[in-house]
Length: 382
Ligand SMILES: Cc1cc2nc3c(=O)[nH]c(=O)nc-3n(C[C@H](O)[C@H](O)[C@H](O)COP(=O)(O)OP(=O)(O)OC[C@H]3O[C@@H](n4cnc5c(N)ncnc54)[C@H](O)[C@@H]3O)c2cc1C
Image (cartoon, rainbow, N blue to C red):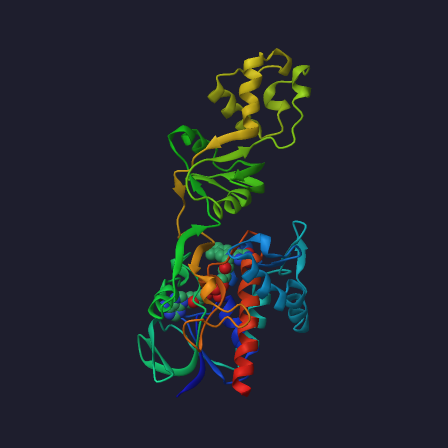
């Protein structure tokens, strides 16, 4: 047997795992010529590493499973670990931790800490099988053997950065079930009724979006293809099909409108172009608030509960993550080992755990990698 552990994927989870395992105990295989490509481009180039508000409610997935993994390597533990190597992420937007200048700060740490392992880059994994307690990992160029295999190959989003469905294929090969995947943390395309949104491309406004029981707050950005921005990305995590409700004027006190001499486009706390577009839709003139009829006021107040049924999403090419994945009831949260195949592990996005916007997905990749490293370390000593 050539290796103790083969790690499939040198992304966030795979690099953290390789950093934590004893030197020369693992080989990391990645289809990309460079590791950590998503880290590099994440968070607008500054990488939103984690969040000060951290618990299982910020994730879609089994709450107990998520809580168990996070409790073993919390956001505080992650920040302490990074501080040991001189990285002190800064808080932005209230609770989100980002690199100070660029995501390279995080990537450099992961790369230098994982350098003690072997890396095979530019090498696509094609499949895994097991014979007489040994795993065989087949790549485009060779077959490698190991005692353990960790699937850290992520989800389907951003195929141009190496994403593939290999993790799901390996899981299925070993009898795991896959919860249906879909693009998430992604913009929505719109239906005919909202085609007028396209003319508003570039405008951003603060909204509250309701999807079922979930409330997503933040800005909404009108885009060529539909709507995007943090609140929309968050909403996409929960959207299946059907209506969402957007409050374009959260907390607005309508009583000021009745007596106001100001024109609606100045009065309503939204970008003027947006107010004018809605006025046009409702067939209302841009006039003083006090000149509005009751039915016109009613129409405008519907902006607190603007219903729309997205046509779809912008798809995997634009999605930050894939939701769904390897079913977590078939994986042990104390070890990340498959309950179906001893020595087979799953970490990161390939699992059916998806975080909201705000650093939750990196924290998940790092926490699950930590749990896995602990178990592999213990098994090695046995
Ligand atoms: C544009 C963008 C911005 C994001 N910003 C943030 C953010 O700021 N904060 C946050 O928390 N999350 C963010 N995310 C999500 C985050 O990047 C992922 O959830 C996280 O990287 C998942 O880690 P992972 O290790 O599971 O998978 P990945 O980091 O995706 O790594 C998987 C690796 O496996 C490799 N691989 C795949 N298939 C094969 C194969 N067949 N053979 C060999 N190698 C293979 C890939 O090349 C890749 O390197 C962002 C994602 C995107 C796309």
